[in-house]
Image 1: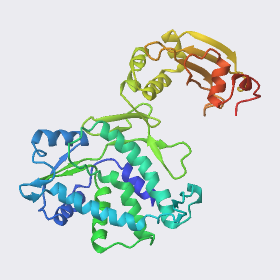
Image 2: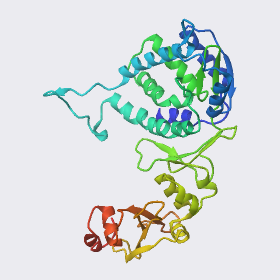
Image 3: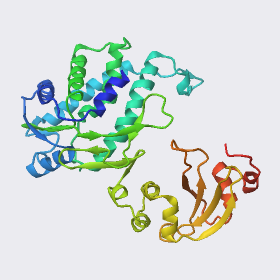
Length: 370
């Protein structure tokens, strides 16, 4: 079931407009509003621009005259239904003992079926969708003050959780809640993000490209945004998101990384990704970094440790330790990479020991890195 809803969240290409419009119209009916006109745009950023320039949001999100707006009515219907369903499918609270809440069991000890559904379906999808894909799209989509954005295919985490509840026999919902769940299942499998207004509903197409990779050490299929050469998310109108190994980055990191741009960048993760793009040795050479100390790496056969001072405008008194990776890449090579170590460090061995939580003298006695 996780795989089914992950596929919906990662789906690209044209929306099923007929299904999406019919499902959204049902939500308007449940909120007491007539079917709207539908305005389709190529991407969420284009939707935000249309809403801002057309005046759709000028009336406010809550009332149209003395009547509740379609936006507020749909939000009320869906959120109330969602709360009821999640209360039924979520595992019970742990019992109280001596006036204190018993701590929840670690993930590997969870055996109650509803806890397993949360752990193996909802939570992995939240990691992939809410914490990665949706974050990337929101970075390029100006927010619309006061208005809820409905995420379509990217509502998958809560939809999958509630859907698992009924399909696995873990919970029973009222007919009204089943109707709301069916509507959202249809929308999630048909289209991307959308915004309801009284007369018009703005619908954004799904991406034309969406690239991810497995999250390291993931147990339940979690994924993160990743593409080394192209946008990780791309829409038909040219809006795009770049990401490498889960780090969302500006386009220049992929297309034109330079030492000058790297040294101007304030975000540590973006800077690290850009340096790895050109290679640590190239960065160190072109930045003319001062070598503080060098030593053989006792925990890494044939490896060396090189301690450098960071550029003052990047971090005064900062230090970077250049090391040789203890394990080989798939092609058999061993990659060099830099590690930030404590400011003012003067010994490469002390800096290496610090990364393992030991002293430099203890690190010097290692037979091999573990």
